Image 1 (tube, one colour):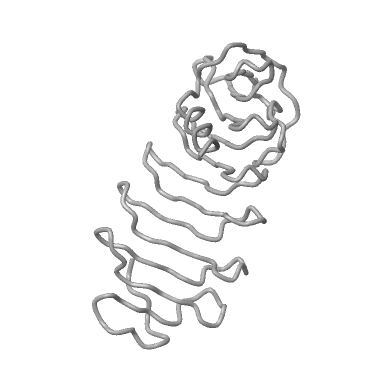
Image 2 (cartoon, rainbow, N blue to C red; image 1 turned 180 degrees about the horizontal axis):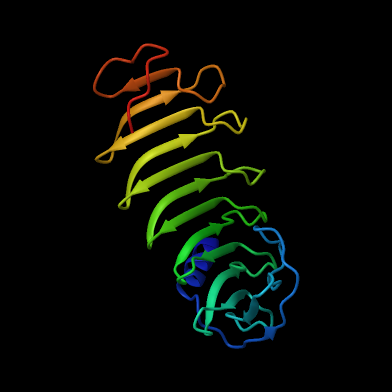
Length: 203
């Protein structure tokens, strides 16, 4: 419960802070940063914030110069539970709106949930609960409604189960039986299971 409270409180406060420090740009790094924040990519300036007033930064905001010369927030990193590790990563689009949010829910230093947005609407949610930090399940949304789920049940990097949703219910399910990444059997909630090798319904 304490972890949930900490996460909720810090998610609500994304721009406030008691101190700020600007550092010069440094060489870039991989898309998913290391545990300690504060390393800008080329062309970025980092601003550090200490939200809990313990003398250590827990939010890093990275800005770039926009077309009009004004600073634009490109991304943010947050240490949600004050353990010195990054637990939340935020990537913004060209207009400054959030394009991608990633959370480490169990504080092991690896991503567990990643949300993707287009025009301020959620379009995909990846789940990577496990020890590898690699997504094994994805939900897809249209107009904020769930339309499809895809899962890699055996961890081979290929989707083996597809669920298509309509009006908040499962409409049909496709299963890959031989591991080739293609649907071998379709089942629907309206009719009996489709024969193996049946063509996939049109999306």
